[in-house]
Image (cartoon, rainbow, N blue to C red):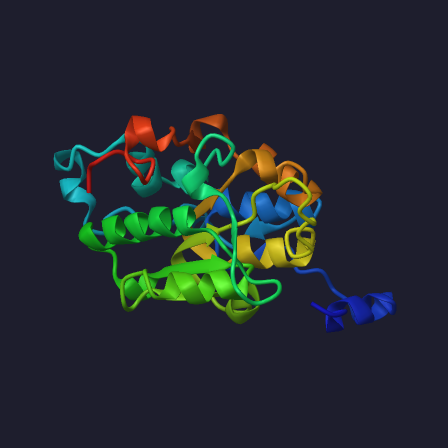
Length: 250
């Protein structure tokens, strides 16, 4: 992103008013953006917004599906479980390592695409409309590849394309994994993009990526530090839980 209009206006402080109430995210999701970018001052406009979740959306059969721990965490529908980080553990799980496309700068992660697809399919199975599910990537090529694998009706786009919009469920595929000699990701170093990505979700935010790789980026490390340990699921090596890291249930 080039310098935004907001950043240009900040030079003239009298032209900027920081809004402290928001009408989109529930309290668990809003807490992330508030702590990272608004000095803790961003609040939900009312209790209805603060406590909104995926409850009463066709989850009555959840107990009958015999889901693995990872999938249970993803579809848990209480407010306190609104934010989830799925750690792909790419150093152990080779399937979830970043790959390069044919053109310069093109990167994708086929393992993350499989995980995101499985999560989308489960939400749909539980009665969530495809129109209520959104998938975000900071990398255009990864988004293009992922769009072909994700169920039709689920919108897959880049962070920039999602700006100004929202979905009840947002899944963010982080893609990047550390590689020997590889350059750092400028996109993951962009705090504004991170903020846009996490604030598209109204009731459920799922981040899929390699925790170890993300910890080398200041904003991402701070974001992960705000997520309760109980909401971080490290998937096992494929040989232990199946090729998608979630086991054989679906």
